Image 1 (cartoon, rainbow, N blue to C red):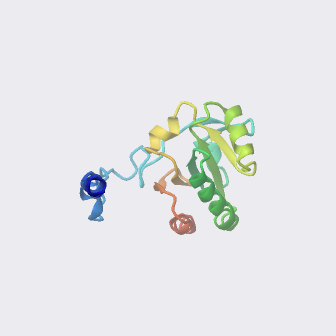
Image 2 (tube, rainbow, N blue to C red):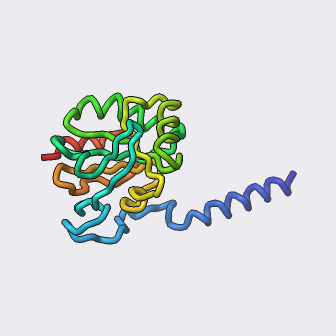
Image 3 (tube, rainbow, N blue to C red):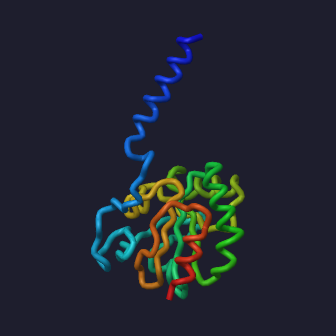
Amino acid sequence: MYFYKLAGLLLLVIMVAGCGDNLAPSGEDRRTSVTGGSVGGSVSQKSPDFSLSATNGSTITLASSLVGKKGAVLYFTMWCPICDSHQSNMRSSVVPAFPDVNFYLVDYVSGSASAAAGAASASGYNDFITLADSGKTLLTIFGATMGTTIVIDSIGIVRMNEDYRDGTTLRSVLAALP
């Protein structure tokens, strides 16, 4: 019995040691600084143009996503339960408040527009336009992963690039769009 307690304690120590400084984060932003207005996927940069197939049969470009709108939101999804929770929250509490913004789900795992359409339909998201990022173009531009949420304003400037939490930051950024 003593052996199992000792082994459990040793395992716990090893796990905690592997966390490094994550147990007491500094709150310091360690991202590389960027020059505002330069081209890139970070906040304050001008988003590079993109062109992706959408599940509705169209091709969405940066320019087409911004026509007549205050901006566009890109949410990177893997169709997992966490993504479903984020997307459901966005659908109910963010999208209705911002009819002058285009919202897109970005599927970077399905491999094609038709597979992305199937995943969106199976997950109950036919009311969103889903972009098939089969070449991982947007994933690379924005340094994104599951849950990354991007806001691009009407002139193509990235206003937000962070993981979705509860929609508070997203609503705040969208409310501040010119």
